[in-house]
Image 1: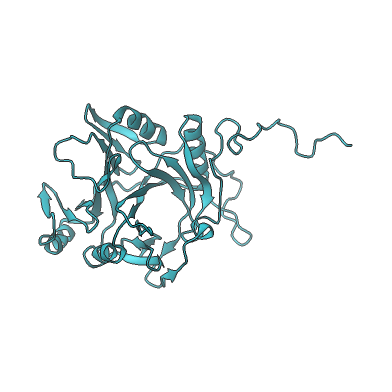
Image 2: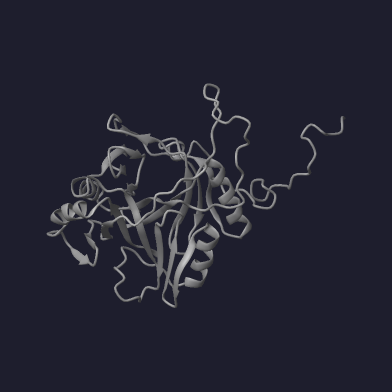
Length: 321
């Protein structure tokens, strides 16, 4: 038995009007709305909640709002939930709220478990033609006008005590280390078989607890681009991207999130099994991104931000000297 992935996240934020528009543009569906609380869903039913800081019952933040307040992880069955209850009941901040159980992790974040509410879905995704594998025959690759995220794929947190927090997720929830920045960061996946990471813990030289980003899985690399271009057209600011992470192989695009820190579209991460051996890397720009565009691509010109718009002519169509 193991945790399946993220079922729900909750942000604490004051500007709910701006957050509402941001997540609608991001591609989520608004399912509930009140003056103090917004609830959104991804394609498979993963929920994103944005709550006003004075909402009753909202867990305390580990840093000033806006930020992440709670992460709910899904398990496969009630028997699995009962199993984890035995592991959690004596830990700090243990709670049992209806069909959820949880505690406070060592960095102070509210961690919850529930039988997963996400829906199985089947989606048409881009097929890739490499030199050796010709998967796409008589069919163009898709182009997307915007992204519609499938789920929250991972969360990245700053932590004061990397080893302590990492051991909690490994020993209590059964997470597995995929790769490491020794003494600086651990990439953790929920189970031996799965995507490269569901949680990344990062300890800065001046250690603090806080949110780095929340990442949303989309179908393929083309949807990363389509989603990023749409967000650019809507006027939202790129932090970095598009680009490619060499450690997980994922294509990414990061935007500044009014609900806290950053959010990421990503696709094409590595899939790992029990045979995978965790690697160790030294942090640095080339380890974070093999390549990346600072400031993003303008949604109107479809060129790097502030670049000249294309003329429509062929690139070789120039007057000879």
